[in-house]
Length: 277
Image 1 (spheres, helix red, strand yellow):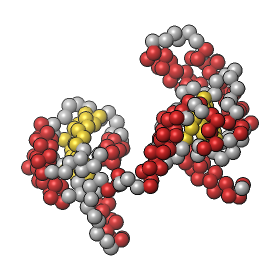
Image 2: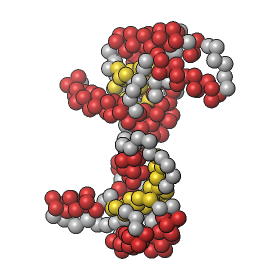
Image 3: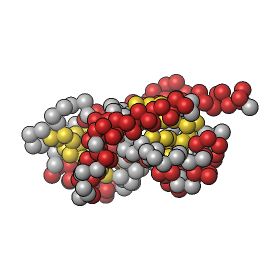
Image 4: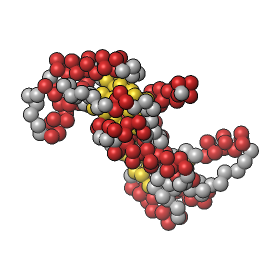
């Protein structure tokens, strides 16, 4: 471990996504310390565990794991114990909790959460729809969306749409461009929930400047002019009010927080739909 950082080993018999999310959520609570992640996915054999223990020995640190095979879990714990390193099963306390309430035994099947069920295919369908309808593409099909995100450039429309798609929501997004009429679909589509996204002019200017810097583009443009951007934001917010769209300020929100707010709005929208019909 170097000053300001520590090694975090994440061992999983599946993709490791759950462990990565948990590890990062915990590490984020410690300012000034950065986790050096070592991810070991699809661990299914004793030989793999033995190799991993060797890599842990070369970079000592904390170990989190999700191994439902008890023999593999025991081998990893014993290896870490011999090294004098902490090793924690993320699943065990949760499985014990479920067992105590359900009075049923777990299947101990690796990767069970990734089964190809109806929910999986719903998410894939949503992701395909979202990619095809990103950035105002095919506005004539907006009626098929669950959610349409609307806003000026750099208000996190695309990443929020993709996050929603991974939750099974068919999300499209439409950019608002000064001087360009919004697509007809914004008025004609009745089924989707339309949500406006906006941010402070300062935040949008900052993001746009970084974008231009990455593209090595000219910075002398209204695209990053504080007054012009402020008018863009004000215009978009007037449009949201005129169209009766709920609006979300994304200035200080993460993508996950914005998506959570959209999902709450979608739940209410769907609850009202039968009455409206």
